[in-house]
Image (cartoon, rainbow, N blue to C red):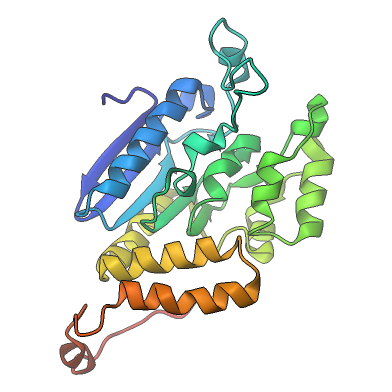
Length: 264
């Protein structure tokens, strides 16, 4: 597939998806939805890819959600006109919705509004630049805010999700507040964002891919289970992902090597 709205680069076991519509603030169209779905399936099905980075072309925004102007053109709607056929656009945009269990590091710059949360909500590690802001404008424009905020409840306290959804355009979550809420795990200088995302991806990609993908799948799928069921099921993931008698790493070599680490 030839991509027009995103780029996909693969190097050193890492796939990098870049949202590439900076002139439209990286807003998504039906074409971008289709291209994201194709890219995530390719990443999922390519064993040599161990980890993915999701970022946006430099500009004012990581993404401002759906491209409203394009959606108003004939055939431009991101959802089917038939209410019984219509599906959530996020079903094509996010990695988990596309059954991609490779770890995903999301690097957010500038504005992340509304539909941008389709990507943020389904990432495994989210970092942002100092200029990042987060908000959901739906209610300001008279629309119910439901899909993206519900997804955000996996990352943010309920009260803060409701505050973001109900205040709409009148308040934006700063990078520092996003860090405090747990929406992101790290803030970088603007110019260092991509390098830091790459560094994190290299650390993850160097680990046994069966272990990292299994960890991602186990944790995410547990979110839809009662806690007691999730804990009982967790053992099965370990048994599947760590077959008895099959070495994933050379433990003796690892234990004999003095490794450094960072403190967050």
